[in-house]
Each structure stands twice: as structure tokens, then as C-alpha cells.
Amino acid sequence: MTEIHGAAQAGYAAEAERYAMGRPEYPAALLPWLHEDLGLSAGRSVVDLGAGTGKFTGLLLQTGAEVTAVEPVAAMRAQLLARHPALKAVEGRAEDMPLASASVDAIVCAQAFHWFANLSALTEMHRVLKPGGRLGLVWNVRDESVDWMAAVTAIITPFEDDAPRYYKGDWRKPFERFAGFGPLVMHSVEHLHVGPPAEVILNRFLSVSFIAALDAERKANVAAQLQELIAHHPALKAQETVVVRYRTEAFTCLRN
Image 1 (cartoon, rainbow, N blue to C red):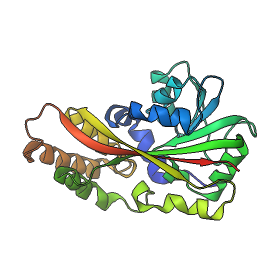
Image 2: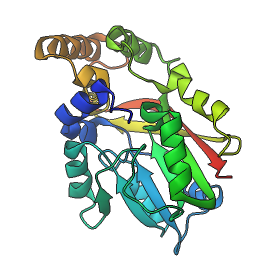
Image 3: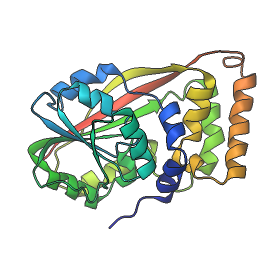
């Protein structure tokens, strides 16, 4: 059984509250994708796999489908249930979901699939999905063409080590070796995260898994660098709110 990556286990357990405060939501413009591409509506069922603190769960609930959240980290599930107390949320992993075979119409992984992009997880998703069921993969991708955002990336990247990341593209490789799903089809929408710098920059990037997992001294050093950037960059200093530009990339594939 594949273990949860150390950065995810330690980082998300340590900074679940900061994650809930600092991470961007997902755009309402994805609702047509959820309805049309994933086929979600009343009477359908969907698993929010790697649900975290429930950032994507609200959109799933808006479709009218029956939502089951699967999340392995207890601290994240606590935040999830604080936000959606009536939700069915279970402890489980992508490679071992406590769900019956061929029992759900769709599975969605928002900002999560790169953590468990392996054959065991795809095999388990294939087991849980009904024939013809749909798998959705979603990521909020920040706009690196903005100079201060590039500076943020330069601050955090030295600590990345072997942590899986969407931009590396390794998450695609298991699909090349697994015939249980059809081709991936991408849908993309623009997205803005607007708020005070302490939320959309400091909390956002201190909640990155491999930063959140650092020891106190190194984490404080990263925080100091981010605060220095906020205090002195012309686009950020003395601003009560800032705009972080994202592109939300959503992929769909069918279970064969």
C-alpha cells in the first residue's frame, strides 16, 4: 500500500487551519463543467477524494448530487466537517476507499491527484466508479507572469524537495499505463483570489505542504521573507487587499 507522502501528512496535519483560511476557493464558473462534463445533478453520486478542508466540496453540493468526502488526514477532516457539518465524510485514501464497488457516478480530486498519481489509486477509482462513470481532476494554477508571484515561488521552491507538484506533470504518467480510463479532456477558466495579503499570500503559501512541514525555525524564515515581500514590493506594500490571479484547470476522463 502506498503511504501518504511525508510532506502531505505532516504539513496538512500541522497547518490545516491555515490551509482553510489561506487557500483560494474554486470559481462558480466550474458549475457547468460539473453538470455537463461530469454529469452531476440530483440523483447522482460523487466522491470528493482528498477533500482536505472542503474547499471544493461546496461546489459539488451545489450540483444537487449526493457527496461523500474521503480524506485521510484527521486535522483536515475536522476543518471539513466544521465547514460542512452535515456532510458524509470518511477516513480513507485513494488506494483504499471504504466504498462499495461500482457504487458512484463520479470522483473528483481537487488540488489533490498529484499526491496519489499511481496505478494503485487509478485501479481503486476504477473499482469504485460505475461503468461509464467519470473522473474529474482540478487544480488552481497561479499566474507566474506576475513578477511578485514569481518572487513568492522563488522563496518557497528551494524547500520543495521530492514533493509531488502539478506543474511537474508526473501525475499524467499512470494514465499512460492504465487502460481503465479514456483520454483526459481539459476545461480551463480564469479565477481571482482577492483578500488581505496576510490571507492570500502569507497563509496561502505557509499552508503549502512542504512549507507547512518545515521545522519552526525554517518556517519562520519563509514567513519573514514573505512578509518582507509584502511590505516592500510596489504592488503589495500598504495594500489592504490584493488580487492573486489563477487559472483553474479541470480534466475529465471516462471509466471504461
